[in-house]
Image (cartoon, rainbow, N blue to C red; front, side, top):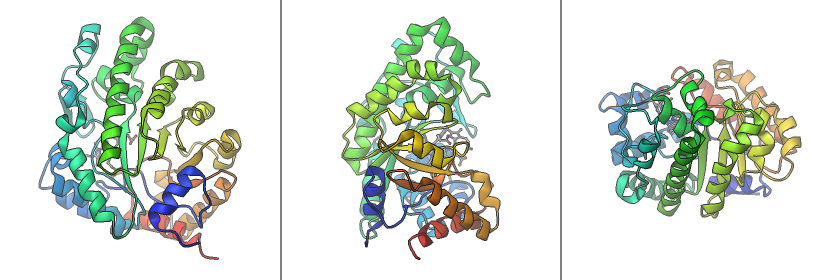
Length: 344
Ligand code: CP3
């Protein structure tokens, strides 16, 4: 079977037969890459997200630097938020100037047309798609999921427990619901514009949804995923990442997503049994394991592929994003090992 990287990726998403799993790494364009740091010295992170030429350049870096087989456009989950009328800065994580804590603040949030509020996003995707055509490498779009965006908007910044946001679910459920509804509407429009501009698959990042009990997850998180899955143009597969979500795996598999992206706390063989043929799986090496020797990384990749074999499809990836101190050598060993799975 001779597949181009795009064919292999899209077939794995849908559970069609492939020669071996495709491979890419979450947060693959970032500070662990010397070429990224070189570009980043010239501009702030926010400027980089809005600078089409530079954003295209850093999006493409992981292809040659680490041998990745998919490109995710360079941006952040907070990119569409200023268009709602919320001031955001990065230090280095997102910081909201005036946290959203009241019903009146939620009511004042705009849901803009992304083609007008973030025209650089669709432009970056159009340029990337043209650049990738010759090699037929798939282009991925992404967005932050409503629960995770709401967590930062209410809390004001990253936090260990996001207590202010969680308490809002019980003290002011109508305000919390209204905020999630606005963010769901924003995300449907934002991912839709990305697909229209050339994204061939899209990933929804729900980094903080795993903090809820299964029952609370079903009430507050699952409906947002379902609505997004139902309203998107499904010619582009939807990948759903829920960090720390082992206890809600059945729910993520019922979201309507094509692929569930797992963190490293889940055993892939066990996950494959639990989700059956409903979805494909993505993941799930601990990013810190890229500090191991290349031969050890190769063995871990073979083990992941073996464990994921019962799943209807598998995309080799990490269980969370690359970290600033991820060794480039380790990332390269990871993609090389995935590629050699096809050779026997
Ligand atoms: O994957 C990629 O290569 C594409 C780019 C991408 C970034 N952020 C670039 C970035 C993606 C997909 C994200 C997603 C994102 N951003 C998530 C969800 C995924 C996850 O990691 O859980 C979240 C929660 C954020 C919010 C965010 N942005 C945080 C917490 C931080 C600071 C942490 C850190 O890594 O420093 C950012 C800043 C950020 N986003 C950087 C990059 C490359 C570092 C900015 C810099 O260069 O100074």
